[in-house]
Length: 188
Image 1 (cartoon, helix red, strand yellow):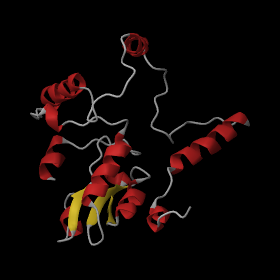
Image 2 (cartoon, rainbow, N blue to C red):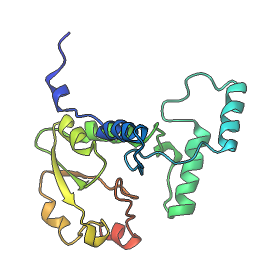
Image 3 (cartoon, helix red, strand yellow):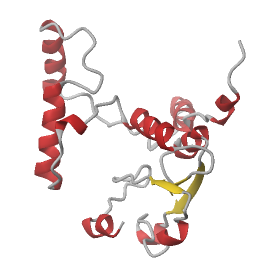
């Protein structure tokens, strides 16, 4: 079987390679602080484990609606209103198993040759690879340590061209941990 040429544009999630190397060093007795994978340093809280077990016992063992369970989508919409003050239609909420799938869907829907996508750098390791896979051109928006890894919003307009179709915003920012302020979001 021959793979499509575009598969050569899809990179790997290097964080897992770093994790494997870190674990190997740890096995050799090295003291390692793990910053490679966005995984909590604690187990799943018991009430969540119990809820999962109860859901299985209650028959939630089949495919659900593609965009997610209506009750969950409604809860997410309510949370968006309460926490962010953004009124959200539950019908506009799509639940995915993590950020990467939905980012990939958006990039495939909006990215194509001739399109530019601005992304934070340093950033989520797979951004550039997903952008290239979509056929679009990645345009890095440099985040500097001296600004606490916040974007230089005075520089942002110089990155935007007639070909810009998408700006990726990640807050809290992975891997640097910075959070955009309300004022920064308003300016963007």
